Length: 83
Image (cartoon, rainbow, N blue to C red; front, side):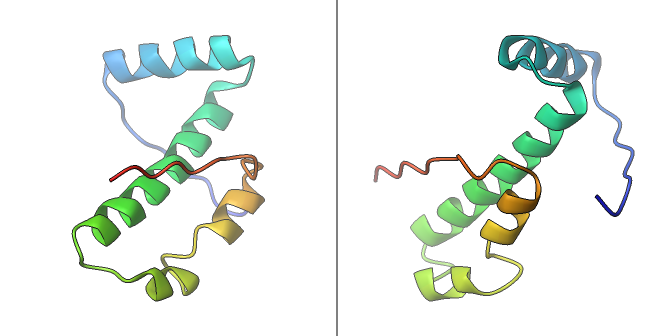
């Protein structure tokens, strides 16, 4: 990992992160990074569904999620899209 970033979260957000980390048997920082990766995927799907981005656009940065997903260890993510 190259950079460190500090983020302020509400007490409810922190509680949710701790609960998810406990359930997944992972560290809170790992869970936070994975949720960020999932957020990028969500934004890509949302923009595609709204017609703002084509599927071809996803092959190029910053939309290509795979280098990001593979670097964070969440390569097992399955995408399910239902219109």
